[in-house]
Amino acid sequence: MTDYLDVFSASYQRVTTRTIEGREFLEAFYRCFIGKSPVIAAKFAATDLKRQRRLLGLSLNHMVYFSIDRRAGDELLRIARSHARDRLDIAPSLYEIWLDSLLEVVAEYDPDYDDEIGLAWRVLLAPGIAYMKAHY
Image: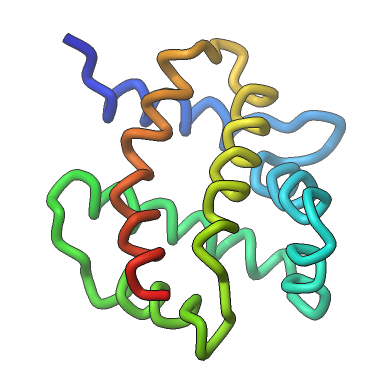
């Protein structure tokens, strides 16, 4: 039986400790994600991306913890509310693009990437994504 938390954690360790062409994982992710759509690019037009990368790293941790224990902490609730329709207005459809972009970059940065690793990322992040969409 596959322990998807272990598979995810090992992959996360590999991608976050690797640079490609001088670009760290989360930097490459934002470059990929922002390039997917003019709507997404507009959402990040005035964003401090260095700060945003740090926040995403923390948010991923909150999403994984939520996946493990199914309890949304105050911080995940704050993030979900900040992304709601009346705040940052991150439409539910954008989360699919976000996840696909993330996995595109995971595949690039994780030398061991395979379908099982991609599935582990999806399994661990799905509950958090559902939580974010529910607060839209």
